Image 1 (cartoon, rainbow, N blue to C red):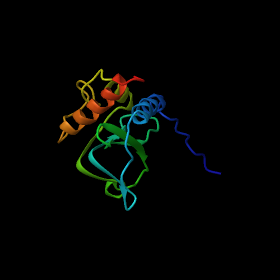
Image 2 (cartoon, rainbow, N blue to C red):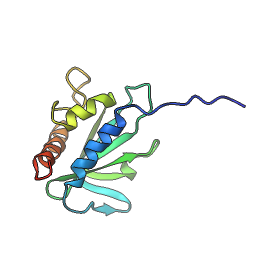
Image 3 (tube, helix red, strand yellow):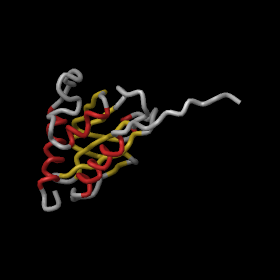
Image 4 (cartoon, rainbow, N blue to C red):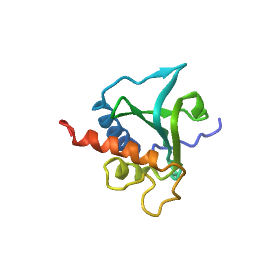
Amino acid sequence: MPSRRRVSMDPSVGPVEELLDAAASRSSGEVERRAGRVMASHAIWLCPCDTDDDAPTWLVYTRGGDGIGWQRVEDGMDLGDVVEAQRLTGCHLDPGAVPSWVRGEWSTPWGAGQGDDPLHSDVFDELRRRILASQDGPDG
């Protein structure tokens, strides 16, 4: 029987998803969907591929007037099948950099000196603003 290499989940996946869950739980408004796709004004994909461990790709998007939503994107899925956004961008990064961005410690999820500024980085700014606003709310 061939041996299968077991890949462990990157240790930052749990904390990242907890932070995103907290921000999303404070968001009002429903997630609008059309033909199974999330409809959003702004969306980013975060591909934490700079790790030896396993980590999902995250999609973070605007929800309602001032909230966010997020979900994992299955490997091999085309983003066009998952989201329809007026402004869509993303980046490849170390998953350990995402918590610093979600907590507002870094202005970008790729962190200082951890990658090039992608096109439409203002989309990251809008989502970061919404995440930080959710932290400042009554439960933040």
